[in-house]
Image 1 (tube, helix red, strand yellow):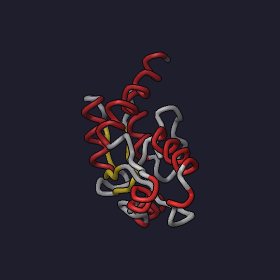
Image 2 (spheres, rainbow, N blue to C red):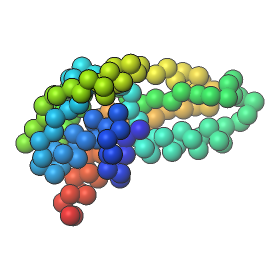
Image 3 (cartoon, rainbow, N blue to C red):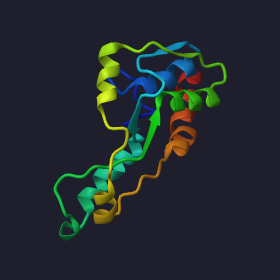
Length: 147
C-alpha cells in the first residue's frame, strides 16, 4: 500500500514513496532496488475500500476466507518516470542494497485478485495513472509547499 498522507519509514516497499517525497523536497534519491524491481502497489484509499467492501459482502457469495486484492504493478524505473513527469528536476539514481533488493526481488511482480473481483466485485479506483496524478503527487506536493 502506498499512502500520500504518511511519510515512508524505510520499509522494503518504500522505494516508490521515498522517490516521491525526495522529489517533492527537491532532494536527490538513491533507490535501494534496481530499476527493474517490480512489485504490486495499491493506493491507501483503495485498500480501505477493499476492506470495507469485503466486510459488507454477502457471505454466501464468498468462496474463501482470504482474498488477494491488487491495483497496479510498477517497476522502480516506471515509478521514477512518473516522479520525473511530476517533478522534472527529480534526481533519481540506483544504488541497490543487497539485502533490501533481495527481499523485493523475492516478492511477486503481480497478484491475482480474480476471486475478489468475481465474489464481491472488487475493482480498484486507482490505477497507476490515477494513483499518481490524482492522489499521490498532489497531496505529497502540497505537504512540502505548505511546510
